[in-house]
Amino acid sequence: MKTIKTQHAQENHVLAQDIYNPEGSLVYNKGTALSVFVRTSTFLEGYETIEVYEDKTEYLVEEVIRSDLQQKTVQQLRHLEKITGLEDQGPEDIRLNIIRAMVGSVVEDFFNERIVMEKLVNMRDVHEYLYQHSVGVMITSLLLGTSMGLEREALRNLGLGAILHDIGMLFIPAHIMNKEKLLEEEYGLIKKHPVLGYEFLVKHTQLSNEILSPVLQHQERWDGSGYPDGLKADEISLYGQIIGLADMFDSMTSNRIYRKAYPVSEAYEYIMGDAGQQFNPQLIQAFVTNINPYPPNTLVELNDGSVGVVIRSNSPFHTRPLLKIVKGSLKGKEIDLLIQRNLVIVATISSTTTSEKEK
Image (cartoon, rainbow, N blue to C red; front, top):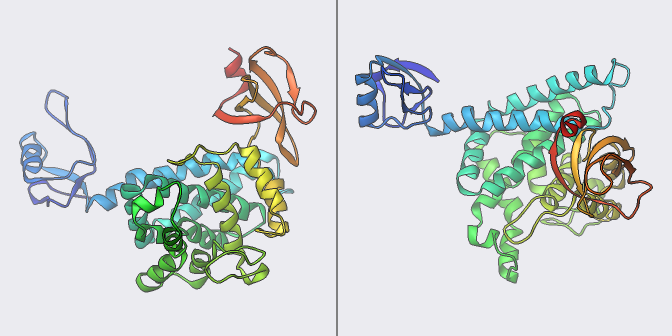
C-alpha cells in the first residue's frame, strides 16, 4: 500500500481507502479498481492524493486473506486441550497467550511468500471450498503441531505445507472436482493433484523440500494404501502425516456440493478407527487427546433437538462433554454425555458464554 497523487493512479491500482464527497456521502468503497473515470471523479471530489494497493492481489491479501487467517487461527486456538512444553509456564490463559503470539507470528510469516498469497487469491476466486479447506487444514495442522511441541520455525514450515497441500487441484477441471460420482479416468486425474502441485511449486518457488514434501505426500497412508507412491509408515514425512490427518478431518466435517458435513463425533470415530491403517496410531492419539472439538462455552445441538452449552470436557473423550441444556425438555439441567449415551452432539451452533445464553 502506498500514497500517490490521484492523477498518477493507474488502472491496475485499487483504492486502499473509502472516498467521500464533501457532503459526507460514500462515493467509492475501499477495493474499487481505479479506472480512468474513478480516478478523475475522485480527484474532482477534492482528493489530490490517495492511498492505493498496487493491484487486486495485494488488496485481497491485505484486506481479505490476512484478516481471515488471523481471525480463524485465533478462534481455533480455543480447541487446544493441552500445549506440550508449556504446562509449567503459568495459568492456562497465560499459556494460551504465549501460543497465540507464536502461532500468530507464524501466520504473519505466510504473507512474505508472494507465490503462496497469489495462489490463495486464485483459490478464493475460482474455488471457494478449496480455499476454505486449505485454511482449515492449515489451522488443524498448526494446532496438532503445537500440541506436539513443534517450535516456531517447524510450525511455519508445517503451516506453509498445509495451506499449499491442495494447490494441484487448481489444475483439475472444476466440473470434475464437484462431481458426486467420478468415472475411473476422472478419479485417476484427481489422484494426480499431489504431483501436479508439487511440480508446480518446485518450478515456481524457492520453498524447501521440508515444505514441499507434504504437498506430494498428504494422500499417502500409514499402511501403504495411499498415493502417489504407496509410501508406508515413517517413509511418510511427519508433516505429510499431520497434514494428511488434518486433510481427512476437515474434508469430513465440511459441507460439500454433493453431501452435508459429517458430525464431528462421527469424524473422530472414523479417524480413531483408522489407527494403524490410514494413520500413525501415535498421531491419532495426539489428535484425539490434545484437540478438543467442543471446548467450554461451545453451543451444540443434540440428536433429540435440544441445545446445550459445554461446561466441561471429559478428557480424553472430547465428543462426550458435560452440558447445561438451554433449550428443550431438559432445559436448565446438566447432562453428562459420558453417562447419557443415548444423546450425541450432531452440530455446533455457535460459540458463546453460558451466561449470555441464559439471559
